[in-house]
Length: 247
Length: 247
DNA sequence: AAGAAGACTTGACGTTCATGAAGAAACCAA
DNA sequence: TTGGTTTCTTCATGAACGTCAAGTCTTCTT
Image 1 (tube, protein in one colour):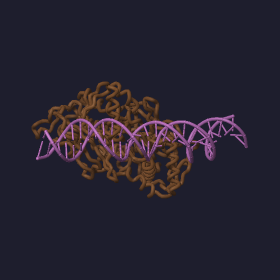
Image 2 (cartoon, chains in turn yellow, blue, green, brown):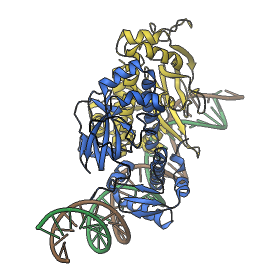
Image 3 (cartoon, chains in turn yellow, green, red, blue):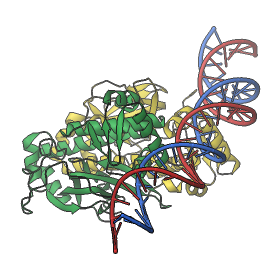
Image 4 (spheres, rainbow over the protein chains, first blue to last red):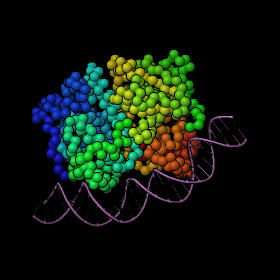
């Protein structure tokens, strides 16, 4: 990426010592909080903010000890695994409020990297404090389980054997739906990741990503920009990807 | 499948009222129990046995309410999702002791089916009782989180873009490794599912599954039987699939 | 501002794996 | 057993998508 895109959410609290969620634009819908004030109030006390990372900077790397769960606070990020032959695999893209690093719990360390896409801020939930919280607050425990269940459920979508066009349409529609949940605009989808990242994530060559976007453009479904797309016909996109979207 | 394969684990407790784990061949390594007696003792009190299902019979179907988590007790099972166009997708195969239905927690109902492969028995953990248990026994809660984390971690393997041969070899090696954890023999892998099931799971045509098994046979890596394979050169298999196996 | 480097797009070609067809083997029912 | 059904295997063909290559545009550097 070349330049950070303009921030579309209001910046985090200026005061570095105020680590609560009151200043967060996503507090209402944050998955890390979710389900109302009661749960959020517990998490709010332990959350820390991780400074402003710029495009390409690492939040954590493989083989670092697992100390905390994270969520994006503003911006966007990707999780990348590297296999034994050095090939990278983009496992997921993270939007504001979406919790990640849940896969590291069972290992005790991270075995993949999280990298900022454009200027990005994160929320950090120290795991030892989180464990204390769950023993005293059943709703936090319940919510965490809920979140993990959702990730297990969601991941299954990306395994299927569907044509490139359907995977691409489903990917864009999924992004749009997740933004709806967060109260962000869906007529314009920022895509701060490279075409190579998208292709890697969808098991497609970079060139195929380009060709598919061009095809959608020619079909008047989207307008293609360098760092995003404008959605002209969301229903049409959803229709193409319908087989992958929910049951 | 044509006939149930001979049971390779000793049968469950004859006494239907004895729903504990003392009679279970997998109690020591059961993922549902795992981590020693303390955890297991809590689960042992709430577990129920679900009768002997025969090949092709359903444990649950899509759109049924979520009431319990399950594990295979003996035999094998598959989880199958059906998309909006009726196409099936084999999401996972389950070995004895492996917990599933974790994806239904967030929905409140099952959105996929679990089907017995050969004669299979299941353990059932009623979820309301499990929730009680987790509030009082932190180790049960911890273990459940651990298990969910592992599933999130494992699923990521199946998403990658690797050649058919590597996916096949990794699949067989993974099965073998899971059997090792359970203390089952690994020189012979029962495959009670159809070639179509394997292919579906690995995003391969049935014919490709056959061709790959034939190729492995010709390379003296395995001996192919109708309902399983004999592993002649496990290291060789692992070498072919190494890119997909762990980081 | 000029040049360089990197990201994206587009086209031509090739490889992998799916598809279609047909035969072989295993299982089931009488 | 025998016939019928299903699963598995093997071969021939083809399509989807990857790879290679060239060219354009953007952004970064000096």
